[in-house]
Amino acid sequence: MSPQDIAAYWRTLGEPLFAYPPEVLARLGIAPATQALLATVGLPRTAAPYLSFDASLERVSTLYNLPSAFAQFVQLGTDGLGNPIVLNTSRNASVEWLDHDKGFATHYINCSLQAFMVSLVAYRRFIEDLLATRGEDAYLDADFTDEQLTVLQQRLTEADAQALMEGGFWQLEISTLLTNRAEF
Image 1 (cartoon, rainbow, N blue to C red):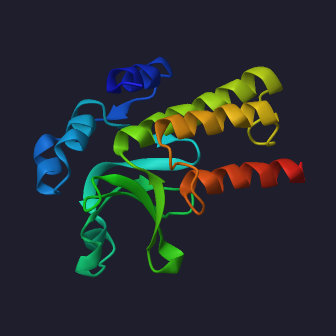
Image 2 (image 1 turned 90 degrees about the vertical axis):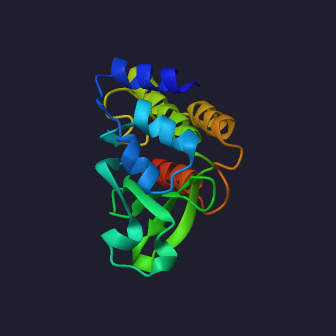
């Protein structure tokens, strides 16, 4: 999925995208390809699963008054529990989340911002499919078929072969979906 396709997808949903000023991106040490993506496409304000993105970018070390070892992390937004979603500038701008309850321990999300953006689209399409085929409460009720879940998993691994690695964000999300389904 190209950056243009990603932007077009969010536009069809009526979701505004934040584009970030190139001078801010350069100041934060973000890789050029990632800078281009953030400056031309940007991020939606919110995206499933319960993510929100910031209108401005800042280093986690500054935002949370953390040691300089955290200066490599640039916060993009947060998850539903307030954990920072970050770019790791020391790892080719991989996307990670930091568990604020465990000393900001790092956890893998995606290998790149583009893979992350494609994964967000894949997850949103999963929800759209549930709503269209299973009803308006399908996502909240974890009402999905094994086939629908398999399609989501395939799309996530097409975007990033490591997306479903043990302990990673997307693997935990899949586990949560399955747990919720078992409870309903």
